[in-house]
Length: 387
Image (cartoon, rainbow, N blue to C red; front, side):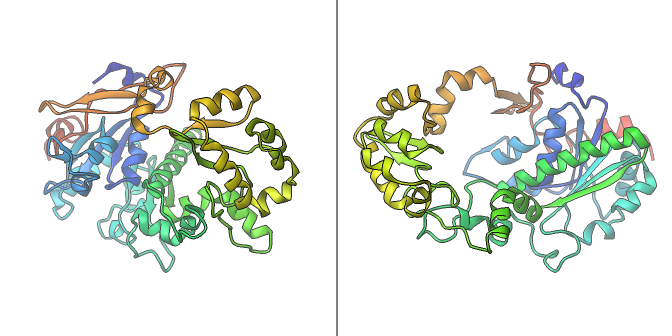
């Protein structure tokens, strides 16, 4: 393991990741990026179900690329939750941990005797993080906490696509990622509070709460303008509440994004004097008409030609990159956000690194996601001993 990780901000903090799939493991991953030691608690018969959750037909070392991406740098300790001896070992680990993360369906963790009250009785200093699909107590609590289903129930799909597209989901597991990051914030606050009071705390969120919070800006508008629904543009829509020219446009060779900009400033640069005649109200009420005019003009030149005109005038514009173009860019390479991680069986994975820099440095941990139970003997010897 790279020694830099031992000097992280959370060095000395022990995290037990009892979650699977994405949201909980995402939270544990970020805590690990900040220097915590993360032990992943897995079933001996197959481990985290995410090991077989394929984004494509690609697997590395017998596991999905998704599992590798979200579990790098962790250790694996196997526990059969139906075996009392294994549960005793887990409780021994809990007694020495600082953080526990779990995302079982409501009711399951209580049946296992690993809910917050039970865990706090073992270790009163524990910071216990829970993620559910829709909250622990409401009538949706037993629905599957899956990202696409949470997006469907949250209203967020009606903000994407263009006017006639119907609901359009995000092309990423955005509910899982947002919920994981919210839980990290809560866990860090819990650790700070524990430092003051000496007592642990239970912090929790859900996929639905994360998506509602994600929409706080536009939802606040909806709640305060008579309950009007968002109205997506039919032409180059990029935000249901923002006026023209906001959108992504086809140029002669590629795509160009235009952000918020007064039309009168844009008019001479595009040689479209009619743009200057539209009022700010027109920019929203007649945005399809305006965007159609802009789209037609932008097709006449390449992205580079337009940027040569727009950037010197301080127009907010950018070329739309695909992944190869991003990865080849000097700016991205200068960020140094990629790393290669390995494990003892020779498996090697090229993946992302922590997005957080501390004192100008990005911590990197060169340990790949573990095989099932890879560190069980080591963890047992260090924390549990003979029982």
